[in-house]
Image (cartoon, rainbow, N blue to C red; front, top):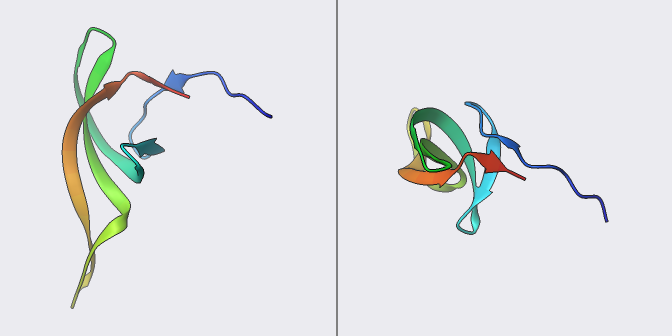
Length: 66
């Protein structure tokens, strides 16, 4: 089994969070080892005439994701 060391969260990165896969759209304030992140789902959303509209959310996630 291959293990990876935790690495800092970056804009554009794809992460697993709360049972879904998310793309990090933006990062905000960092408090106590967590960072406020604006996330867009890569699996959930709705199709519109002009393309796919993903479910989005903001959450405090760990600064280091492994």
